[in-house]
Length: 293
Image (cartoon, rainbow, N blue to C red):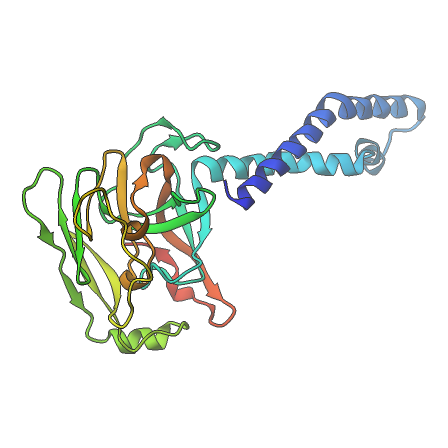
């Protein structure tokens, strides 16, 4: 559970206490006081006088009135949609630092908001989905990557090239990549972050699913890849109930290649669109708003 969600839970709980106290104790007392005031006055009370009596517990009533709003926000964030901010460049060019995405939380099942256990199954991640998940090594941190490998798939990453052997098939398929001819010009102009002059964007065909990726041929992995048992270096088989996730910025993403697989129990939801984008340096980027591929 991230900090904002924790604060929301605490605030909702506290305002709920005030709301029930007001409903069961203080509001009935105010109604009695209003009735007594009406009896004791020879002329009917004005609207303002009635409101003054009914709002006599001002601070308590104000706090209690926040509960319904916070409760609705909590339910929506827990089970339907939740906003997330992109903190790094690991998903460029699809997502930039400063993008705010909306995540569909019920896509991969209706889940317990505390334990993340699935209550009702809806669907499973598909290859190419952009997903938010709890980082396996530190579950309190949310990561966002693209699903590359499904349960039972064999993945091979050699010399910067990606190969996938889908579950049930006998041969690896080379994941092809077509470089954008104007990638240098476009990204040096539009992206406020510094890019190596060798950073190239292009379109990857992920077994029928096309999406944009970035290659920086001057960059080298910051560490050794994760080694799965006795399998060769740079090769993995995705276990049942797990997924292999990678960033679109292939040479600048710490993903499943380095720390392993994403358990189904860590899934938060699928990123479906950008609802706001901006940084202090670049300002608001209206052209970034819209759906994700």
